[in-house]
Length: 145
Image (spheres, rainbow, N blue to C red):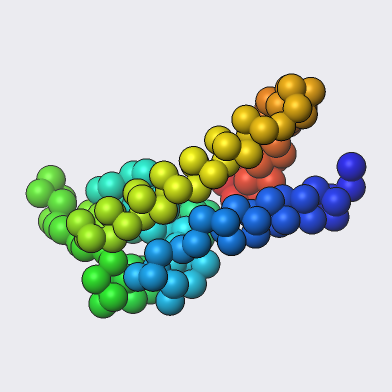
């Protein structure tokens, strides 16, 4: 498989899942970078800007810019870290969290249904592909360390 073939397959998969799951109305105006931060905060509430930047592999000032726009939109809330008042802890607003959780649940349900309809041989191939894909992600991420 070439790099281009892998990118094409992954892109087609993401597009199909995104179309099938329909982004919630309150998230339709968000950029891809903003959505990445929103998804991160769903998984890791209470992250700091620096922690989010490391996880997303971007500069802290990039995350700060995203946070400012998401706070203004009512999607993200900031709270001062009681242990270090210089640090802001980030979380999704309650409304955004409900919306993002419901969207994730829809995406997982659609994906589980599609996986269940695959022939057993394809399911085994997908399971076998997980480790190499994770190794590729690690290799690609080494330049960010």
